[in-house]
Image (cartoon, rainbow, N blue to C red; front, top):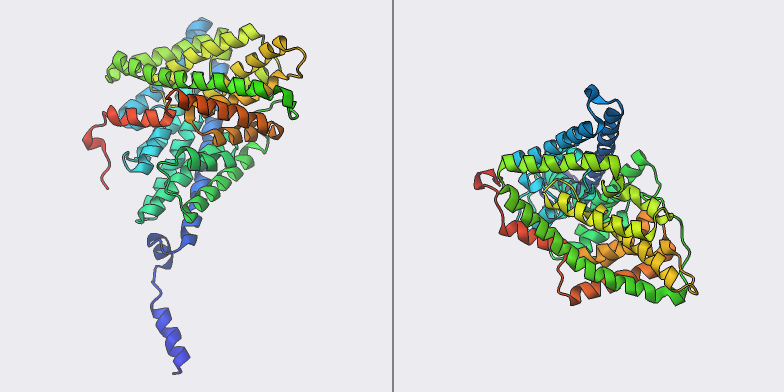
Amino acid sequence: MTNREKITRSLLAKVPKDAINQFFSRDVSSISILLLSIVVGILAGFVSTSFELAVHFVSDTRTDWLKSSIGGLPLWLAAFLISAGLAFIGYYLVHRFAPEASGSGIPEIEGAMEGVRPVRWWRVLPVKFFGGMGTLGSGMVLGQEGPTVQMGGAIGRMISDVFRVKNDDTRHSLLAAGSAAGLAAAFNAPLAAIMFVVEEMRPQFRYSLISIKSVIIASISATIVFRALNGQYAVIQTPQYASPELSTLWLFLLLGVMFGIFGVLFNRLVTFSQDAFVKLHQNKRGRYLITGSLIGGTFGLILLYLPEVTGGGIDLIPTITTGGFSVKLLLFLFAARIITTMMCFGSGAPGGIFAPMLALGTLFGYAFGLIAQAAFPDLPITPGMFAIAGMGALFAATVRAPITGILLVIEMTNNYYLILPLIITSLGAVIFAQLLGGQPIYSQLLNRTLKNNKLRQDDLPTE
């Protein structure tokens, strides 16, 4: 036997019998992490897109039932009962099986990345999916992005457990990758999803070359799945605007200052409403379910008479940007949707707050544009530009992630020529929010959760 044959046989003897299992479990290869990131992205994209389709199915079915006048009931009573029943499902699943699935879910993922919150994916995935179907389908003012981010992160942790990944950094990377994939699929915005993890989750995200690659690959995979199922169009169909005249840019800065002030107030209203609902139901299941069902039923009634103040608000944005409302109506809807947002999100229903914030920013931004147009008739002002800028500004002021807000709005509306006013407005909002001592909304929610944690010790997972 030659020396070469001896070396070859020696190397072959060292190859493990279960090469695939070793390939994943020992975390010795960056390729294995990237392959798992693809799996996470595909699954998160499929679940997130399926969640959106399921919510639309429930909403359409609710409408069909109302048209058929179930059992000869009065329309208002049928609307109340159907929405109350849908909301009851969401609240019950959350309170009974996974309290951490209430609300947005993004603070839970940030807490998990920091190592202070558990990820019970076997509970969170079904509860968030079906519970969110109930609450969002009932017409409540909630967004789908919070659930998709939490479900995406849960999928990342699920893949880590299924493939028995032991390395803590790898598990962390897959958790972050799943979260980004969930956001990418929610808004068809892969670049904003990547930046959200890097910018918003920067205190928790362990930045490294392999972790950022995982986030990018998962976001791309999820977006491909979304576009394969939903098409490649922008999520929000708005007019395409040219770059604004330089003489109008100071108005965008003024709008940003106003959103910076409002952003601080908005965040305080969110935590205030959450505390108020806890005092109301005292975390007792009966009170919790009655409160939630009454809220859901109320929105069933509102849907009949004033649908503009219900739902996440994404479908409302195109109507706003095409000039469908007067200044008075815009300001009325703005005030009304603040109240309805606090009612729904503060109650602990499974659902996000991204979409409601985008709608609020659009409402006030367009109203500001109309007022500025009347006040300065000599300036070439297009109100719709301020509506688009307002979307990013409120997000920047509340979440404290201006780059993410800018990219999110651009990807959702395809208005790339508005990048300069978006930057000016978002930067003004962030600076003034900081000057007023405001804190990022998700950091506040996470701190509140940790402070008021009422999960029983026997419900926590065993590692």
